[in-house]
Image (cartoon, rainbow, N blue to C red):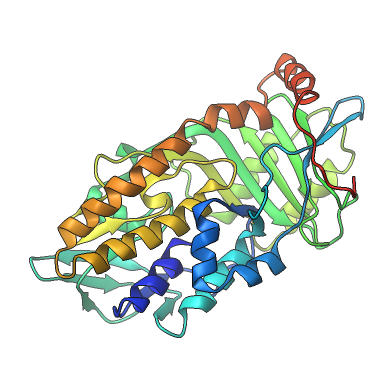
Length: 364
């Protein structure tokens, strides 16, 4: 999200951006995420808001299902309101890439392997492409940022696992309930089925400690982590075994260790960090909105002080860090809502949920 958005705005200010993406092409997986608040205004100024509205899920609320099969909801909690949108992650990435592709260079199936900076630029070594020199480098490569590791050091010093994991995959079939995200819980585990836009998606959200040596690129390992976590359980949803079978067979699964990134500074010399690489904060999809807003803020700061990257990076961080920090505080409430750790916690959550605002959709 952050890279293409930054490229779009830098190109508008006369820069020549290059976006480097490890994947061979735009990815097809991922759970729906929100475009909300200032990110909606950024999307409108980019001319992509109509496409995002067309891609939006239009799901009105979240429904919890008790162990007895009773439904609570649909609830308005966590759902977009007003002019805010929920968009499948892959669709959002495609729209943002399309907006930037005429004015930016994209290097797919490649990654940065070394950075050497001096007073006038940064020499970049790639895994596949020939080495090149750039004025500035921005690491917008996620929680497990390679750029951050090369410049700031190992992620163990900056990334803290928050006790939750998320795995998501498309089901390639309609959802049983087309009008709500339906969630089932056992202690420390949740299964959600999202209707998306007629092609349902499943999400597994579960509690667990940090796994030493977990390779965030090993899809087979990710699947096994999920399968081990859901090996047993008394589920109100009889489809859980089928969903796990689909996960085993899925060619691509989005897997994420819910983590918090904390850095004393978001830049060193001519290298800056953006999006989750700088400050991963959210379980409710705010990361995409922060990435979009942060990219616009960084581009504006660079354009406002041409040739003075230190001032630009400082101005960007001062403005955007305040917004990112405001999102850190919501994690514990989100975790308790979605994945209560005990039977008592599920009961208390369900009782409290009966008091939450309901979705006002006429379809429910």
